[in-house]
Image 1 (cartoon, rainbow, N blue to C red):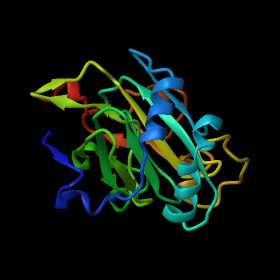
Image 2: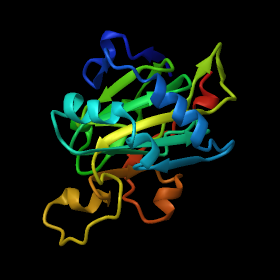
Image 3: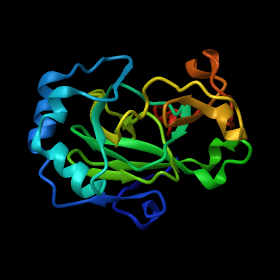
Amino acid sequence: MKIKSVFSNSFAKYGKVLTGYDVSELLNKLDETTKKPENAVIYEPGDAGLESLPIAREFSDNAYGGMPIQVGYCNGFNTKLNCLEWHRGSELNIPSNDIVLLLASLSSVKKGKLNTAAVEAFYVPKGTIVQVYETTLHYAPCNAVKGGEVSKEGFRVIVVLPKDTNTEKPALKEIDFEDKLLWARNKWLIAHPDSSEAKAGAFVGLSGTNIDLAKNK
Protein backbone atom coordinates (compact mmCIF):
# COMPACT_ATOMS: atom_id res chain seq x y z
CA MET A 1 0.00 0.00 0.00
CA LYS A 2 1.41 3.36 -1.03
CA ILE A 3 1.43 5.97 1.73
CA LYS A 4 0.73 9.45 0.38
CA SER A 5 1.00 12.84 2.08
CA VAL A 6 -1.83 14.93 3.49
CA PHE A 7 -0.19 17.77 1.56
CA SER A 8 -0.73 15.95 -1.75
CA ASN A 9 -3.57 16.54 -4.20
CA SER A 10 -4.79 13.01 -3.45
CA PHE A 11 -5.89 14.11 0.01
CA ALA A 12 -8.15 16.95 -1.22
CA LYS A 13 -11.26 14.78 -1.50
CA TYR A 14 -10.88 13.60 2.10
CA GLY A 15 -10.04 16.82 3.91
CA LYS A 16 -7.56 19.67 4.20
CA VAL A 17 -4.73 20.97 6.35
CA LEU A 18 -5.59 23.96 8.54
CA THR A 19 -2.98 26.65 9.15
CA GLY A 20 -2.63 29.75 11.33
CA TYR A 21 -3.39 28.09 14.68
CA ASP A 22 -0.73 27.77 17.39
CA VAL A 23 -1.13 24.25 18.80
CA SER A 24 2.15 24.09 20.74
CA GLU A 25 0.51 24.53 24.18
CA LEU A 26 -2.19 22.01 23.28
CA LEU A 27 0.30 19.34 22.21
CA ASN A 28 2.54 19.98 25.22
CA LYS A 29 -0.42 19.41 27.54
CA LEU A 30 -1.38 16.29 25.59
CA ASP A 31 2.11 14.85 26.00
CA GLU A 32 2.41 15.83 29.67
CA THR A 33 -1.00 14.75 30.98
CA THR A 34 -2.23 11.78 28.94
CA LYS A 35 -1.15 8.14 28.86
CA LYS A 36 0.14 6.34 25.76
CA PRO A 37 -0.28 2.53 25.90
CA GLU A 38 2.44 0.45 24.28
CA ASN A 39 0.18 -2.25 22.82
CA ALA A 40 -3.33 -0.79 22.68
CA VAL A 41 -5.30 2.33 21.78
CA ILE A 42 -7.21 4.54 24.22
CA TYR A 43 -9.71 7.24 23.29
CA GLU A 44 -11.30 10.03 25.33
CA PRO A 45 -13.99 12.11 23.59
CA GLY A 46 -13.40 15.16 25.79
CA ASP A 47 -10.64 16.12 28.22
CA ALA A 48 -11.23 19.01 30.64
CA GLY A 49 -7.57 20.02 30.69
CA LEU A 50 -7.32 20.24 26.93
CA GLU A 51 -10.68 22.00 26.64
CA SER A 52 -9.58 24.65 29.15
CA LEU A 53 -6.92 26.02 26.79
CA PRO A 54 -7.61 29.11 24.64
CA ILE A 55 -7.10 27.10 21.44
CA ALA A 56 -10.30 25.17 22.19
CA ARG A 57 -12.33 28.38 21.91
CA GLU A 58 -10.51 29.25 18.68
CA PHE A 59 -11.44 25.89 17.17
CA SER A 60 -15.06 26.33 18.26
CA ASP A 61 -15.32 29.89 16.91
CA ASN A 62 -13.21 29.60 13.78
CA ALA A 63 -12.92 26.00 12.61
CA TYR A 64 -16.51 25.12 13.57
CA GLY A 65 -18.13 28.52 13.01
CA GLY A 66 -19.29 28.97 16.60
CA MET A 67 -20.61 25.45 17.15
CA PRO A 68 -19.97 23.60 20.45
CA ILE A 69 -17.10 21.12 20.28
CA GLN A 70 -15.16 18.64 22.36
CA VAL A 71 -11.39 18.27 22.52
CA GLY A 72 -10.20 14.78 23.32
CA TYR A 73 -7.43 12.42 22.32
CA CYS A 74 -6.56 9.05 20.81
CA ASN A 75 -3.28 7.58 22.07
CA GLY A 76 -1.43 4.31 21.77
CA PHE A 77 0.02 1.88 19.27
CA ASN A 78 -1.83 0.65 16.18
CA THR A 79 -1.02 -0.69 12.74
CA LYS A 80 -4.39 -2.08 11.59
CA LEU A 81 -7.53 -0.75 9.90
CA ASN A 82 -10.10 -2.87 11.84
CA CYS A 83 -13.07 -0.53 11.23
CA LEU A 84 -14.17 2.63 9.47
CA GLU A 85 -16.45 5.29 10.95
CA TRP A 86 -18.00 8.63 10.04
CA HIS A 87 -19.77 11.51 11.78
CA ARG A 88 -22.10 14.40 11.01
CA GLY A 89 -19.48 17.15 11.11
CA SER A 90 -15.76 17.32 10.37
CA GLU A 91 -13.08 15.94 12.68
CA LEU A 92 -9.73 17.58 13.46
CA ASN A 93 -6.70 15.36 14.09
CA ILE A 94 -3.53 16.94 15.49
CA PRO A 95 -0.73 14.46 16.25
CA SER A 96 2.23 15.02 18.54
CA ASN A 97 3.97 12.14 16.75
CA ASP A 98 4.03 11.42 13.03
CA ILE A 99 1.08 9.17 12.11
CA VAL A 100 -0.68 7.51 9.19
CA LEU A 101 -4.42 7.85 8.56
CA LEU A 102 -6.36 5.16 6.67
CA LEU A 103 -9.22 6.78 4.75
CA ALA A 104 -11.99 6.09 2.23
CA SER A 105 -14.99 7.94 0.83
CA LEU A 106 -18.44 7.53 2.35
CA SER A 107 -19.88 7.58 -1.17
CA SER A 108 -18.15 4.24 -1.78
CA VAL A 109 -20.21 2.51 0.91
CA LYS A 110 -23.19 0.61 -0.49
CA LYS A 111 -25.71 -0.80 1.99
CA GLY A 112 -23.06 -0.70 4.68
CA LYS A 113 -20.51 -2.60 2.60
CA LEU A 114 -17.03 -1.58 1.45
CA ASN A 115 -14.03 -3.50 0.17
CA THR A 116 -10.81 -2.43 1.88
CA ALA A 117 -9.16 -2.06 -1.54
CA ALA A 118 -10.85 1.37 -1.60
CA VAL A 119 -8.85 2.53 1.44
CA GLU A 120 -5.93 4.95 1.02
CA ALA A 121 -3.11 5.75 3.47
CA PHE A 122 -1.85 9.26 4.27
CA TYR A 123 1.20 10.36 6.23
CA VAL A 124 0.63 13.18 8.75
CA PRO A 125 3.69 14.95 10.24
CA LYS A 126 3.51 15.83 13.93
CA GLY A 127 1.94 19.20 14.67
CA THR A 128 -0.18 19.19 11.49
CA ILE A 129 -3.86 20.13 11.89
CA VAL A 130 -5.81 17.81 9.62
CA GLN A 131 -9.50 18.42 8.97
CA VAL A 132 -11.22 15.17 7.98
CA TYR A 133 -14.51 15.88 6.21
CA GLU A 134 -17.74 14.27 7.40
CA THR A 135 -17.89 12.41 4.07
CA THR A 136 -14.60 10.67 4.87
CA LEU A 137 -14.37 7.24 6.48
CA HIS A 138 -11.64 6.97 9.09
CA TYR A 139 -10.79 5.24 12.36
CA ALA A 140 -7.91 5.06 14.83
CA PRO A 141 -4.60 6.53 13.68
CA CYS A 142 -1.72 4.22 12.83
CA ASN A 143 1.93 4.39 13.75
CA ALA A 144 4.06 6.17 11.18
CA VAL A 145 6.02 4.10 8.68
CA LYS A 146 9.59 5.22 8.06
CA GLY A 147 12.06 3.52 5.78
CA GLY A 148 9.62 0.67 5.31
CA GLU A 149 9.44 0.01 9.05
CA VAL A 150 6.64 0.84 11.48
CA SER A 151 7.68 3.35 14.12
CA LYS A 152 7.91 1.94 17.64
CA GLU A 153 7.05 5.22 19.39
CA GLY A 154 3.28 4.99 18.98
CA PHE A 155 1.25 8.18 18.93
CA ARG A 156 -0.71 10.81 20.78
CA VAL A 157 -3.35 12.60 18.70
CA ILE A 158 -5.71 15.45 19.59
CA VAL A 159 -9.23 14.70 18.30
CA VAL A 160 -11.71 17.58 17.94
CA LEU A 161 -15.35 16.81 17.11
CA PRO A 162 -18.84 18.27 17.50
CA LYS A 163 -19.78 18.07 21.18
CA ASP A 164 -21.01 14.69 22.54
CA THR A 165 -19.78 12.72 19.52
CA ASN A 166 -18.65 9.18 20.41
CA THR A 167 -20.52 9.21 23.71
CA GLU A 168 -23.40 6.89 24.65
CA LYS A 169 -25.52 5.69 21.74
CA PRO A 170 -29.04 7.11 21.83
CA ALA A 171 -32.03 4.80 22.08
CA LEU A 172 -33.77 4.83 18.73
CA LYS A 173 -36.18 2.94 16.53
CA GLU A 174 -34.62 1.91 13.24
CA ILE A 175 -36.06 4.00 10.41
CA ASP A 176 -33.30 4.07 7.79
CA PHE A 177 -30.79 1.33 6.92
CA GLU A 178 -27.97 3.50 8.26
CA ASP A 179 -29.50 3.20 11.73
CA LYS A 180 -28.12 -0.35 11.83
CA LEU A 181 -24.62 1.12 11.65
CA LEU A 182 -24.92 3.57 14.54
CA TRP A 183 -22.39 2.43 17.14
CA ALA A 184 -22.31 5.50 19.44
CA ARG A 185 -23.67 9.03 19.44
CA ASN A 186 -22.90 10.62 16.06
CA LYS A 187 -20.76 7.59 15.15
CA TRP A 188 -21.68 5.28 12.30
CA LEU A 189 -19.31 2.33 11.96
CA ILE A 190 -18.61 -0.66 9.73
CA ALA A 191 -16.26 -3.32 11.04
CA HIS A 192 -13.93 -5.90 9.56
CA PRO A 193 -14.86 -9.45 10.63
CA ASP A 194 -11.44 -9.85 12.24
CA SER A 195 -11.91 -6.85 14.56
CA SER A 196 -12.86 -6.83 18.23
CA GLU A 197 -15.68 -4.43 17.36
CA ALA A 198 -17.24 -7.06 15.10
CA LYS A 199 -17.02 -9.61 17.89
CA ALA A 200 -18.76 -7.07 20.16
CA GLY A 201 -21.68 -6.81 17.75
CA ALA A 202 -20.71 -4.01 15.36
CA PHE A 203 -22.08 -4.20 11.83
CA VAL A 204 -19.67 -6.21 9.65
CA GLY A 205 -19.34 -4.17 6.49
CA LEU A 206 -15.67 -4.37 5.52
CA SER A 207 -14.53 -7.13 3.17
CA GLY A 208 -11.08 -7.90 1.85
CA THR A 209 -7.82 -7.65 3.77
CA ASN A 210 -7.79 -6.10 7.21
CA ILE A 211 -5.01 -3.65 6.31
CA ASP A 212 -1.96 -3.94 8.57
CA LEU A 213 0.86 -1.45 8.01
CA ALA A 214 3.22 -3.78 9.85
CA LYS A 215 2.84 -6.10 6.85
CA ASN A 216 3.03 -3.32 4.25
CA LYS A 217 6.21 -4.24 2.42
